[in-house]
Image (cartoon, rainbow, N blue to C red):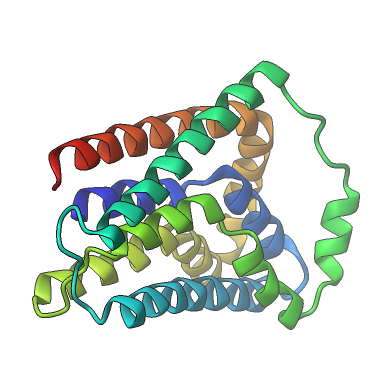
Length: 216
């Protein structure tokens, strides 16, 4: 479980579409507060998903090869296959046209509540679903499971937290460097997305097939 959560959390943290949107939110008027609303809603969504899974399982992992265990692994397999399929499709389609400055103008006018709504909306829900299927194996009778779940939430949100803190303590420097980051993300977004989708997708497929065939 820990390895799966680590890989999924890292993929969520560096997901190009979410990172680009958050940089634009920070660059808007009152961007620091809008960014905070975005991060808090993003984190709250993670906690809600994990809580829903744990309430369903009662904090006890299903027995190997049981129906719930097989179903959770099948979900990860399906997500992995979908990520690989979309990554290949995105690669074959080639670079997509970039949005105009109108997006920046729209984000500049959003309210705090709208910024908060963007947090859960812009999460990579395929990866979140894979994480939820992995959380099924959490055993709350062991402190290590609590640590793993806490680390999962923190790591998945780490890139947003880092940008938010940097903007709060170094607003001038962050404006310049985050602007460069935005340009880089917009220039290399398609390549980064394809590599990420294929890498995580193949990992999930391989891990799921192993678990289904070995019963672990």
